[in-house]
Image (cartoon, rainbow, N blue to C red):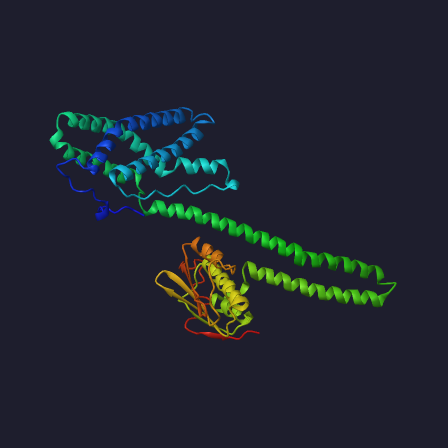
Length: 408
């Protein structure tokens, strides 16, 4: 969370008192500790940068610099902890670095570490702290023995400057930094989802259509051998092979529909969602009110979101009716799927809701589930609106015409 320029009331230091109270003694301890800790931080930073930059022409220089920046992150964390305990400064921890996946390799980790803004701000903090640590140590040390009456005011003035440095250099910089970390994490969700989809397609091809086509080839081979010796048996085998071809074609069509349905590409969400609803075992009313076609990626996510939600309605809800509504609000695409079933659905109930939420979150979307025990269940999904850029404009889009679809 980005720190506001205004200091919250519960984050303000207590007023200065003439007597040296506990708060003032904590500030004095903080200021006296500035010098030795600043020396340690400065030496570490100079050695880290000097060795890393000096050896940058070799294979070990940049990795050492990257590791050093992660060490600077730890020094920054320690300074934030010291400020919390001695200065009463409540400050959020910056976002952690997004984990680098094993398949992304060493160079991804190296680049992510070298461009880490939190580490570089901690480096700048260490450089500034040395002269400031010398100044605060000398002023407070002298005040302890010479300027005792003004020591509380001196400690408060210097510690407030310390608070400003910690806020400025060691707090989360802005919302952009957090957003980058979130997007890095979301990218991992997208990669995992894509890999899982590819494995599913490979498994479906291997266990379904491929296996049938192999059996079909063997059956046709046997029919060829019996064609002259036993024409009737060969004819029966050809007839069985014909049936297998039909089944294999249907499996391939179902698989292609699971990748990206042709009706969605050709006619848009209205027709595609009506097609999904017609296959649901519960009567579904579909209402689509959109001003035009959106980007193909957003259309695809919306389609598969509704498809999975209607599968849950068929399998788990016990509903008598359901509805799907899609509309646009400002720059967002809203999807609402509701049913009058038994309710009680949850994000961790094994119905794929958490997976849907992760997929939507990966494209800056939202997923809200409202399913009290006894029903009804309402799922609201929100996606960013992105206009279609293929020149088709509003092709295939229909507005304000709900379609009733009865399950088979």
